Length: 385
Image (tube, rainbow, N blue to C red; front, side, top):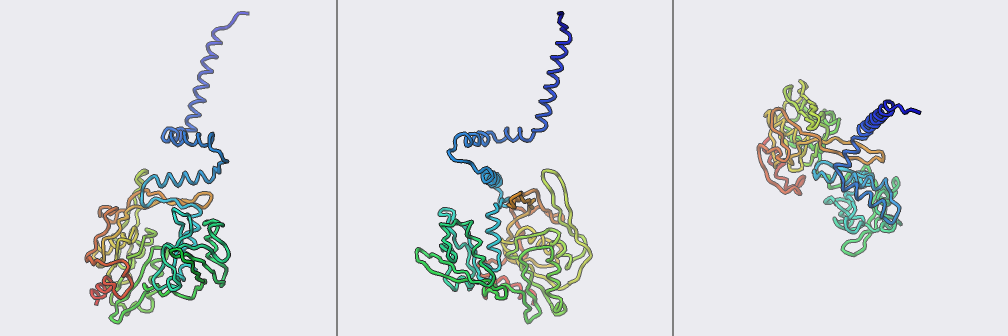
């Protein structure tokens, strides 16, 4: 039998071509995975070693979310974050009515992993029962936390409707008990920041954040007294921000068209612009109170009032959060946020890490906000009187 070498050669080259095409297809399809291996070789190496060497079964789901936590924290960015589902639950508990009305918050001690009291409001129900920051909560009703686990126990603080919750606490080794109850009608005595009208026609309005209804909530609040207002104090000293469009809509109440906020995505170059309209409704003078805890959208609003001359900004230099995050949720309902770009107010330079310097600087201990010694508030009232 005579071999047809031409067919053999052609077959060889066709096979090589097919293999090459298959390889190119493979590398193209798995391009991101291959790049990941190149960018994080030590992570791949340690992961392989853990799978081959670690003496127990591996909970890969748990390990995956811990890796995500490490990835986000590794950015070393103060505004990028990862909240595990356990952290999400903790936040829900701390923002619950029962903890707010009783005036305290809890967390997990990093060293001992025990439940610890992280905040206690002055003059609150919690403080009056002897709770203080740093105390440990040992048991909730009949459940011992160290035995049950912190994350398995935290939601027990919420209790059942109208049923009191008994907490066994430890202060410097001494055991004491407190009883808390969810009471939606009771306001804690620590809520000293309340909206009010002063005798001279100056109205004080506390704005803790910018949700979608910030403008309508304000309008509803002053609807019956708007004609009596001679001047407005807008308190943003604890305002950590919120929705950008809500901030612009809020300023719309005081100023016409011509102002804007631009968000610029650094990687993609995408630009979003939010502009004021001609929706002016109020012409009374405004003093905006700010502090280092005024961030993001609060700084945008302060910059609007300051640059246009529509109001006077008073207090201390703001926190300097001139960036925004893109926030997403994962399958287990944990969340993460990655800083994606910068804010630009009108034609002003970005204020990230710099903050907004008030027109009138009034230094004050933040602990005095809302007290009789709130000199920033007193100065604002004096300026508008």
